[in-house]
Length: 420
Image 1 (cartoon, rainbow, N blue to C red):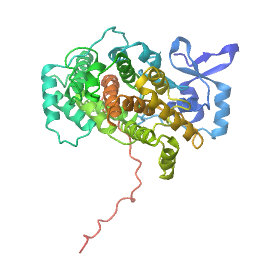
Image 2 (image 1 turned 180 degrees about the horizontal axis):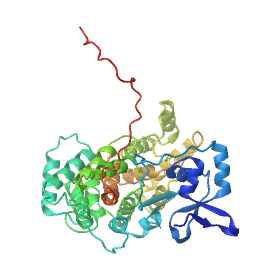
Image 3 (image 1 turned 90 degrees about the horizontal axis):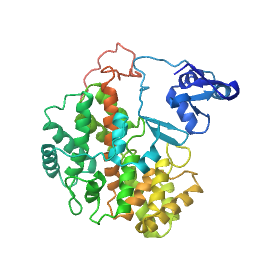
């Protein structure tokens, strides 16, 4: 990429790095300004990165105050990645519009694209017998009240324990592990209906783990598209944790387990379950107003609305809502979701996000509140593997931030032992 890209009429264009330096921020913040509508951007020639109008950047710099020099050290957590770009309320997998990719390709094909940059039409994942057997046995031994991520973490660990080549971090070995690990996690989950083992699309095998109701083509398409849409979303907290683990050269099973641990949080993977429960409450009440009022009265954010990255509607939600409109069984859940958005708009002005779309799907198909979290975790496993692949190609242990120490100034005398 050149340092400067020409714009229309000869107007000077800045690269992302130049814009960040002028604003005194990190490159990620530049893209955040774009997503919030504070800065415009244009794809660079050849589609490699973005460019920014120099005058617009200078005007924003004047509004935001004097530029602060950005420290570029080995401890900076700005992470190079060629996987996902989020820009102007859209997101891209290796430069391809992710929403369009998910509409046109299966989950397995999207995962392969993110991993390799190559399309593999008809890509299929198969669980190794030994790994699936060990993962099922480990899950069966778990306490009855174990959550979804508890089961998936145990399954990943068990699958890794029977893989003698798990410490082989070469590209081909990691790809082979990924193609076997994801279906192993699906196979390890207890069936909710007639068990779909063996071959076939991953979405069909996962369906029987989520609901006892029979699958139809429309519902399976929604599930497969949801998986593809959720494969990656840049450096979400769980993904960053995976990259830190991979930087220490944790094998793929351990890196995925790290991501699952972070995902098991109310502000990350569990958000769809909260939206599911709220949607059930609205269906019971027949009106979103009292349910939304209760959320606001309790000082809670309304589940399924708003997103830190997108200024408008979450593009993942937009794709899923369009597909859900074609499912007759989703009519009442869709109406309830629209009522929530309409009611909340009077107070918050927030748009629907992918958690609300997942909640419509899971309630309409008779799935439990945890189903959305299961879909999220399994979908994102492919993204974590893609990020692990990238990190294995970097220098090891490069993610070592310095702590900003705020304790007493040393040296301090050791205090006397406490007495009763």
